[in-house]
View (tube, rainbow, N blue to C red):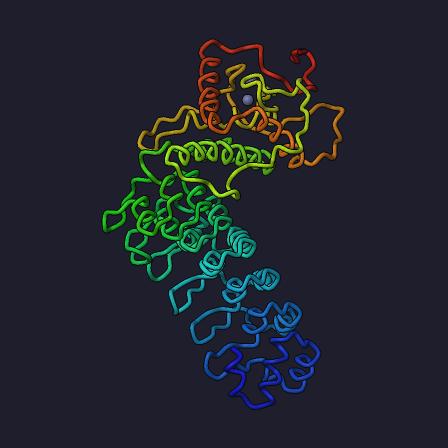
Length: 446
Ligand SMILES: [Zn+2]
Ligand SMILES: [Zn+2]
């Protein structure tokens, strides 16, 4: 853009330069004097004032231009919209402003046939990605195209935003996309090696966090690309040893987020955060055993060392009565029985449906064997500060348990939980469940 500015007349140069640097007054004065300037574009790339403002995050000028009813979907030489440029550069305020002004999220550039969603995913701007998805959900796109189809929109070479985020090592974007319904096992047409899945591309990029996310959402380690390679061989080829260890089909399978369960898809944000954290923790414990077995050292950034330092003593009356290790953080509705996030997850993942078999028996409450209508965050008793921050409580209380847990046995104890949940179910397991405090008659006093 800078180079282009040098071949303009000095008058035009002043205008574009003012837009680029956010000199609102100069732009306003010039445009008021000659309104034709509003439609000025740079000579070669045909960037409009809107493009330049959006790419440089000049929200004041962008708003002023949109207020002059400038069309938000102007196209430059590569058929890129201002929204694409803002998403590419991570200019979240400009992204939001353009979306509010009705910018079309379903425009495709002529460069790679990509949408603004591809741009945000590729460049790893999770906030922009989220804003575009939220807008798509409530706009005509959802009605005409279908929201799920938009999340999985393909570029000219058959790459979805998830493929790009996985390849470019963008775990936050991978997470948001999966949570929004991105297909975890979609294959590309020509992008990367033809037939690559997001897991192949994460293996190629060597991002452990992306590999983790994809596996936790049920990515298949055995799916082959068009050349017959599984993600494990791709990781090996590119010397990503830690990724390869997790992708090795002979390694222990990670726990998979039980998304098909109705009450999981309906979780509120706080309960979801607790369960997601428990899932990641359980999987990291499995990981450390896998890596230990393969004699691969994990870099300090992946270990949990040091997190045990400030431990909150939990009140024993809050202890989960299935594992006696963790604090109850999750409450089953409608019966109000409480258990910890780890046991909840173990209960749900234990009943993880096999995609090949249609029948799915949803798990029941391990205490009363009643159906689970909803999972909510457990209430910690009446004496607690009503304004407590759920995240604070969950992180400090969950942390308590790490003290007693030896990482090398972590996953064994987790498997133990599954079986104790199972046996509780078998024996009826009634009476040991903790009930929310407002249900006094049913509360067991320890
Ligand atoms: Zn438990
Ligand atoms: Zn119950």
